Image: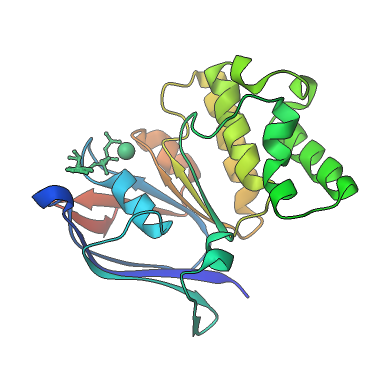
Length: 216
Ligand SMILES: Nc1ncnc2c1ncn2[C@@H]1O[C@H](COP(=O)(O)OP(=O)(O)OP(=O)(O)O)[C@@H](O)[C@H]1O
Ligand SMILES: [Mg+2]
């Protein structure tokens, strides 16, 4: 059953600093939602709230499978991933970094091998599978981060500035990964400062304007 996300009247005010005032939206169609807004407008905050990693001060985050509201438990959290630039990569090979999520979910050896290689191929990292992940370039690390997230086939994928400080060639590769995944019916919420990129990728553009979420 397809996962749907609805946020209503989200307010967030960390340490008395009002960041999000009244954000409501239904992410109910799948595909790529591109979220834009100036520095400090609350994009990352909103992504963390949607990914259930940070709690709003007011309002509701509701996930649905069909009409059924889902508990915010570990099984729901396993259906989504937030990817931050260069975060979460650990000191092991590229292969082990990508396969990690499958291992902790108890996948068998053959499944781990097959899915990891498929994702490494998809991310253009197959030739580097035995290299230490920490020795990758920043563009390669960013592709690795996305491959790590995708290997467990999340239904919701949150990408926070996936191409910030990444060169043009790697930006293209990352955009191709995103476009490739759009077809699979995954829902993606992606932040960017690059309007042209947003136009290339988006099924729906969103903006944070005056602490509120609006269609762009
Ligand atoms: N714990 C906190 N205490 C006070 N203010 C906070 C806290 N966490 C975040 N903020 C503030 O919330 C605002 C929104 O930050 P956020 O990182 O969500 O913005 P952003 O749109 O992602 O910006 P950028 O484009 O620079 O990534 C910022 O002004 C930030 O300083
Ligand atoms: Mg941010």
